[in-house]
Length: 151
Image (cartoon, rainbow, N blue to C red; front, side, top):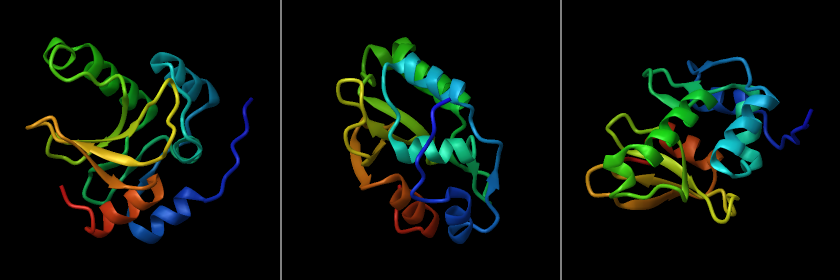
């Protein structure tokens, strides 16, 4: 069983931002390993520790701030294999982990099987642009919930 060093207690942190957030049982090491193996990557410690505490997080508006591992796998597989995406917008270099509720999706960048920097980008579904929005998962959550980050 792989242990996770935690620099932050995610539930407590998120509750300071979004007191009514909904949390779930943490993802298992097996679920996390399967996600990594499916996409040939190593999850950054921030995302791994958050998912270990809560396998997905739902905000008070019902929008999922972080998808569960199953949803991440489903959505990323769809983005990589659906002909409409695969043939026009290659996504092998991104790991999507949440959506903005309007079709746009938040992602971490993958470089040679690893997420080298924890920076967060948003993919615009209308024009295929990818824009940096936050330096870390912690800042993404803070800025998204507070409204500092708008899409």
